[in-house]
Image (cartoon, rainbow, N blue to C red; front, side, top):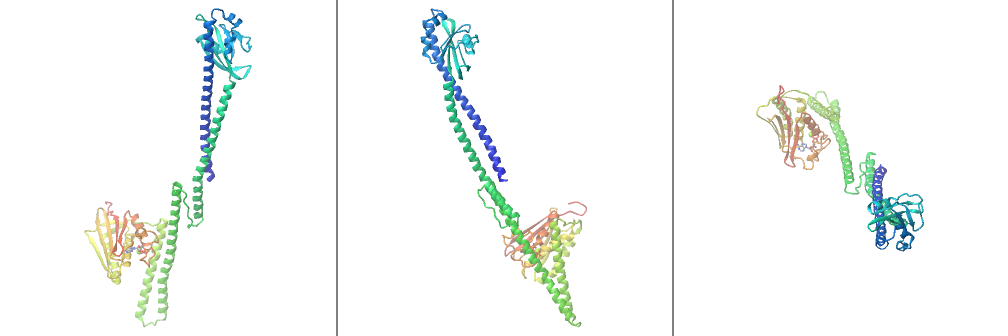
Length: 468
Ligand SMILES: Nc1ncnc2c1ncn2[C@@H]1O[C@H](COP(=O)(O)OP(=O)(O)OP(=O)(O)O)[C@@H](O)[C@H]1O
Ligand SMILES: [Mg+2]
């Protein structure tokens, strides 16, 4: 994988760099060449102009042929170029190096000169491997064109100059290309190496080592990925810990009633028949402990249904008035036993709604159970019901120990047990929350440590007959 990113970056940048460098080089070299050629042409033309002016000033009284015959070649000696004199038909009358093309093929520059007075041409000639530049201008006598004077210069010197300048540019281009490639390689390393580290850490976590942490190299996107991965591992560790605590606490809680049942069974076996009172007490305790076990197993079953998504909500008619009354009467003895002031309050008329009565009862009893458990004797618990704004609002408030602010956000998590809680599996509120959510309602907990807790459950109120 690391090779992938690195080679992708490398190939991409090398392609761009090479293309850019090549295009720039071609452009620069071409500009230099054109410049050199223009200079050469300008130089040749200046010499040519001087020669032509001299001709029309001093030699125009004789014909061109006569001038070629006579000793007038002195003034074309002032150039180092090859010199040709051509008549108006394009025939070469004289060539300073003696090259005389036999057929009268007119050169483009001569043609141009005859038309416009001046012409230039670069091209190949048989006697110079470098190619030549030819510049032509008309010779005039008394304002009439009598022939063409042509200076021809080898391109050897200019081409060599262009070549050495190009060499410098090519070297600079190569240096730039190599440096950019190196830079792109270093850059890709700053991506690939941290990524490799994150991947290594993820692999260790995948192998089950959640204590492994990914180290952060830069505070960039990959750094954030690394942070997220560490956070993930922490969360998994936390959940793992909670699950383990859950297993140990649930085993402990299953054992307590079993011990008590076993103890009473042994006692009752030995007790004489006449001791009715002891009999009754023992059997009562065994019955209660069995209820506790059943409730606990029921809770576990609900939890596994919740986890597998099989928790269901039925729709039936619930007489709210009666519902609140039943719950109140069911829990009053428990409150009395715990020495708590338990009051049930109803505001206004309570209608008949469509809901799952059993699940609703389970939620309220669970929340009330918490309130009882976490309120010391002498405290009070209030269960209040009101229907308002299309919702049934159940409020359970207690004057108990409250929930520390740092625990409050986790209170509804699976397996979460506060530091105040010794008994219990820590599943109660998570199941309640899920049930309320499935009913389309909400369960909110407000608490201040040492002052008490208030749980507000809101359920959308679907009236019998479909109206909200
Ligand atoms: N009324 C309350 N007052 C103070 N703390 C509470 C109250 N209700 C809940 N808590 C805190 O929230 C935690 C989670 O509650 P929850 O009902 O989910 O679990 P539990 O009561 O410990 O176990 P279970 O209900 O499964 O027997 C409790 O352990 C307790 O610390
Ligand atoms: Mg509970």
